[in-house]
Image (cartoon, rainbow, N blue to C red; front, side, top):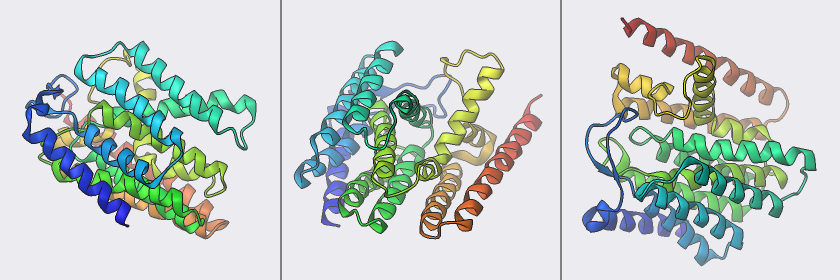
Length: 317
């Protein structure tokens, strides 16, 4: 508990420094065709989040890879936030970091599965970044997603991993103080990229050590995974240039249809909370309850997306 409070306060102080000093001009988010906002806003909040997390982790003495691998992604992402980097260098850095994690944690993974896990990790890193486009959304997913990880790890008897995840949740709760609508600061790549990596790496680590089954991380972060993956697939089928900026994610459509940032975030929070709670219940009550939970979400998501698609189609000329 004390560790989480420290993470929260450290992140809060970092955000105030970033907002009240000239550091606010370090990286500015300029509105473009992908943006859902119309003003210039600092996008350095990820520095405060990850500083709160990593400094707290350092004090409690976590293994070196949990510090160095996210730090490497923070560094390359911060350069991208400030100066801009070509996509190939960003992807190369992400691939190297994810590959190093897999090499360091090969437990219970067949050699032929490694490339698939690498692809999945890099995809989760990037989809988290894709979904960071509306006030309070990415911070909320970290709050609820890592909160669910923490609860599952605690129930499995791993207090250390539960503490690590709670520290991440606490840092993002502090971030939401300034990022919930109307946002005063954005996360930026320096926050969304390492958070995506931690969602993937901790999810894999928990599965390898028997704390949860393979589907649990997928369900916990499904609000982001489903939206980003289905949107990408639809853009590929429409033969769009998938590397170009767009506003066709489901959360973006909700904002544009009049829901606004606040209502969209609150609705997403409800989905995130239900995904996490139902996942934990399915872990506790194995068997038919698990099947029922997974089957329910396999029905809920298509219905919700079809409803949004139809509403979006009606507003078009």
